[in-house]
Image (tube, rainbow, N blue to C red; front, side, top):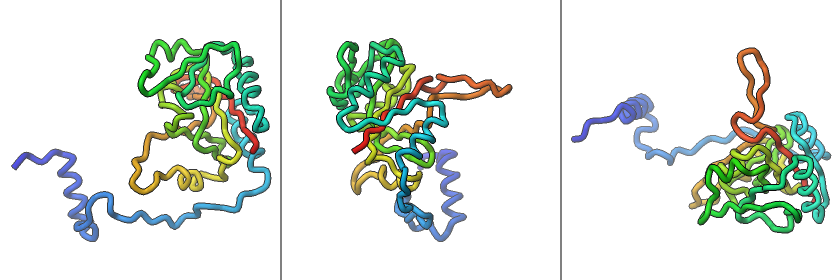
Length: 219
């Protein structure tokens, strides 16, 4: 018999200590979800989302359904971005004329040098959270892979008003994969990337874009 690894030994001891779960296979134990998963959506959900995003030093524009292209154009102009990366599934109507568009396709992904040369990236999102001012990207065709929205220095994120939920449990419920589907990686973004050193000096752009511009699209 092959020697048991340290990890296997630790798991064996845990299962032995938890005799009530000893006969259950990993992943089959039901997870209790007694917490509140949905609240009545209050009035002013979009405005609360906008206020929380701004609290994180991000820019926010609210545009009508036919104003996405103009909103993205304005955001890119303010960022001084003319070389833009986008995921493969981003609608062309969201992109203004006069910018160099580099599509990041699964079959032909942009390399690290190409990503670093971009002025900004434009993506959609899976869900926005009003309570925390967070946007969540899940790898869908309008979101793209993680490297695309973490390497460039600026991120323009388009959020449909119908995709804004009140709080984190509501977002988790929406992001849960359908039965039989495999969950993909999620990127949770609350404002531009920032950290601080031991003297509490704020430094931006360490773990992702130093500039975030959110465009909320009213239905």
